[in-house]
Image (cartoon, rainbow, N blue to C red):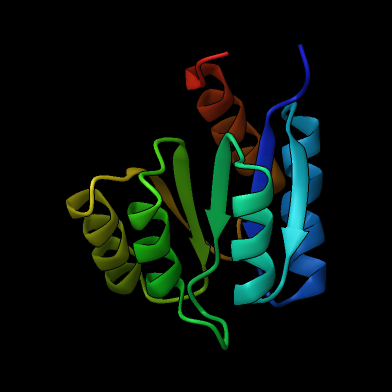
Length: 128
């Protein structure tokens, strides 16, 4: 069985690669994007099994959450961000209210072992 795709967006290349490495270790095939348009195009071209969003970028992570809801996306949506915990919880609740399968949120910086453990648990929930 091919590895499930994890589409992630983060405008900080080092952090995006950190998350991608954790995803690879957890059995995902990560696709890294850094811009809104690039994320949307990658999503529409090859719908991923899971998505990871950074809220604190020039692009609004909340808008991407709405985009995913508009696409009737059913895979896990993981929020990984350096924002205050209250902001992360609010974004999480919004995603749930929009009908998304929200995971996390995870505050940056996150330990690699914690991230790998969470991703492995989420991978186990995916329907092949």
